Image (cartoon, rainbow, N blue to C red; front, top):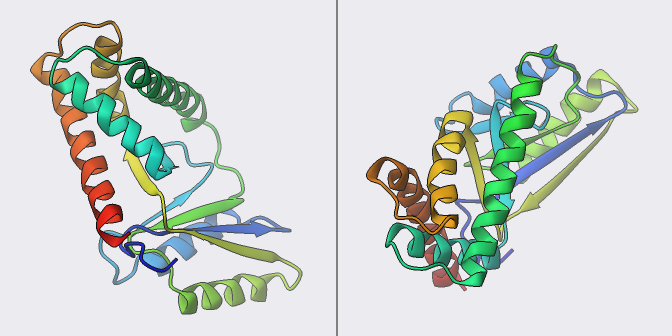
Length: 199
């Protein structure tokens, strides 16, 4: 998409008939991350990582809500709604990931490549190699550039929940609870600024 910062796109790759095995995925991940420090490749069934994308309006609402929370101001109705949605999403993911973490790894249906995303040539080579193993395998790629993409560890998600819940109760945040929300606010605000500058 023209005019959108290219540091944030994520390519989601779907593999069908048959799905990638865990061993195949590990090989793909090793190849895609070789020589690309910082690139993260996340299988969608691997619940040790929280992977999500948000459109600019959702991020804008969260920036407003987080700013009010960390500054100790009364939350507006929209602020409460944004933080409540985020709190519920985090809580659901933490519960689901806890149940899934100890399960035997299954086949990998799709995965996302973050920062930097796959370029066209990399995707074409990847698709060709995956189809080479199984000639009837379908490999699809979807690039999403105008959204904020996040990959976070469980500990980081868990650290945000107490502060969000405290703010939703209308209570002031302590330093320990505020710090993870300040970091999240800074990340969202920086991304919004880049989107606005590019627009």
